[in-house]
Image (cartoon, rainbow, N blue to C red):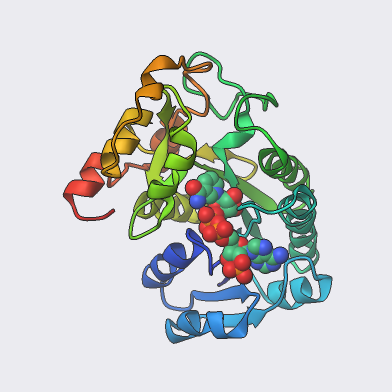
Length: 284
Ligand SMILES: NC(=O)c1ccc[n+]([C@@H]2O[C@H](COP(=O)([O-])OP(=O)(O)OC[C@H]3O[C@@H](n4cnc5c(N)ncnc54)[C@H](OP(=O)(O)O)[C@@H]3O)[C@@H](O)[C@H]2O)c1
């Protein structure tokens, strides 16, 4: 069994691949697609095959999926990129990767997506049954392109596609927790962020990849305790700006997700149920 993982030089992928390899059984192999050969070196050292290429290049896609049994598409472009690039990578290239995988006989395809696809809040934790409702403070080309990719990939006939919707991911030296203040500094004190530690995102992805009989299924991954803007400042050791207390949260359930499905169906239990558990374990 050969599994292709894209986006392995990113924050999620670089922490997921070592776990995937560490949990491989005899005969299970991993291939990574990277854009820069030198950045593939750490994965080669772990025993992965390395294919060099860009996700938007159909020739590279062909090489990447040749002989592959499963794909985990982690790659995405969303950190400060133009909308056209977000669409080209997150929607168009993801769907092309799905088509190339299907044509090459790939059995299973895990699409890594985001809880932002839900759009506006519903006054309760959103479940995988909830349709995407574009809008709200976090909507834009990124969630829109990820939502379109989900839809088009799930509609591919003849391949077992699964979708993982990730929360705000942190931990293990990822600067993301500090970066959260770029948004949280402009929030109301009570506004919450639903997060997940890298160990738990990897746990969720591995469960979604390996579980039999879940073709076409979507799973939220997150921890148990969304944190407020006040706590994000405290966690980062930053003074809480007074203005936070003058604002009102316009949508208190924005991207707060239910993890009931992944718990019940796949046995997911967060190793770090809250960011405080991760901090206490020295895992930030
Ligand atoms: N981090 C989060 O909090 C979070 C939350 C929700 C969902 N997600 C999802 O999780 C996945 C990973 O996110 P991340 O935080 O790890 O992102 P990241 O750190 O920005 O990494 C993105 C990865 O995608 C690769 N990539 C981008 N454009 C590419 C292209 N044209 N061809 C090939 N590879 C390309 C990057 O390669 P280079 O290194 O060469 O640029 C990098 O490996 C994404 O699908 C994202 O939507 C993340």
